[in-house]
Amino acid sequence: MTSSGGDATAGRDDTVPTDDDRLANWRAREARFHRVLPFGGLLVGSLLAAFAPAPGGLPMLPTLVIAAASAGWIGWFVTLHPDWQGRHRSMAVYYVGLLAFAAVLVAANPWYGFFAWVGFLHAFLVLTGRWRFVGMAATAVLVATAQGGGLPSSWSNWPLWLALVLVNLVLAGAVSWFNLVGEREHAKRKRLMAELGAANRQLAETIRENEGLHAQLVTQAREAGVLDERQRMAREIHDTLAQGLTGIITQLEAAEQTRDRSADWRRHVDNALALARESLTEARRSVRAVRPEPLETARLSDALTELGGRWSALHGVPASVSTTGSPRPLHPEVEVTLLRAAQEALANVARHAAASRVGVTLSYMSDVVTLDVRDDGAGFDATNGSAAPKPDGGYGLTAMRQRITRVGGQLAVESEPGGGTAISASVPALPGGAG
Image 1 (cartoon, rainbow, N blue to C red):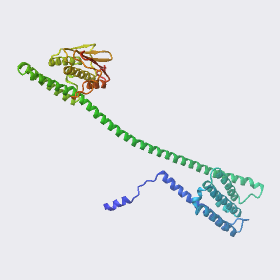
Image 2 (spheres, one colour; image 1 turned 90 degrees about the horizontal axis):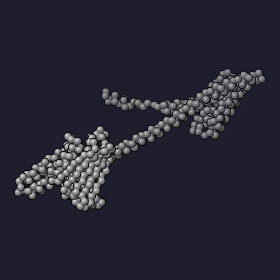
Image 3 (cartoon, rainbow, N blue to C red; image 1 turned 60 degrees about the vertical axis):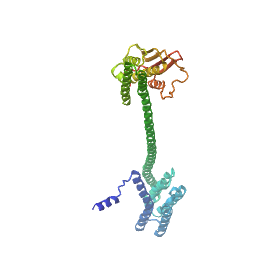
Image 4 (cartoon, one colour; image 1 turned 120 degrees about the vertical axis):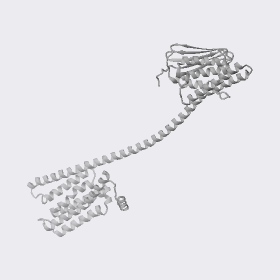
């Protein structure tokens, strides 16, 4: 039962015909009707002429011969060669012959007005332009003559005959006009459908292109995000693990040199342990993209003061930290950038400067905030690309400059051998609620 039902469903044609399909079928039936109609008119006229002959007409035999010739003429052009309908000259010859046969048959017997009436339909079918109306006017004359039983025999009958011609012409013209309007509307609708189809195809192509561009943008955004995250992690590793490990190594080396002094050895080891714990905490916070711990519990100015105190205790170099202007909350990214810049600058002083004192100044101004770190150490040649990566893997000033540039700031470095170093970071004073 299931198989039978499935076969029945599969065999059913569920295709729903469109308006164009229905119009094409209707026009095909109309074309067949127009090909058959002349023969029907000849048949009706011949039957009426045979059973109700009109007075004064031709004998039946010659009339039938002319009717047969008319059928042959129509059959040759319309039935045997339907493809000739697109040949304007051939159709003009056909239509002239059709009217000629109709005129002879109407003159032979008025009943053939049923055949002459076909001229109205075929004028619109095979003729073009103004010739259609010429053909309809000639057909109206023939049909009016048939309806009046022949041409008027006296002047008093001419007005009636002219009235018949006018009525037939108006009726045929009205039908033809509506047919013409319908054809124009169909042509317009067909053109609009073609334009709509072209627009739909173009839209589909645009959608496919947009999908490709979207996929490309997603890929590029993913790659940019990966690169940005790599750069962020590189900066965080440099600012936390690298600096912490450097401090730990420094403290352990100092402990190695003070083995015979228990108090000093213990102090350096404790400092190394504290740096290790602090670096581990900061590394974990960096992985989670959380703000540094000093900024979670204190303002930036206080965090810098604490940083300077710890650094001075570790390295035995006096570090003064001062703040000018009115401290206020800044955008978290700005505060992190300034704190990391101070950490990097102090780390460079500890590694390279051999300074006797360091000064850190945080200045709040109306639209910018500046961080200045100065030392009286050995200095270096600031014009020979000192911001390039170090051979030991350190990034020197590169990470600091990347951070500051990322928030729209600028970094200035002034130094000369034996004259100390001054580093100035200037960033926009974005308020704490800015996105």
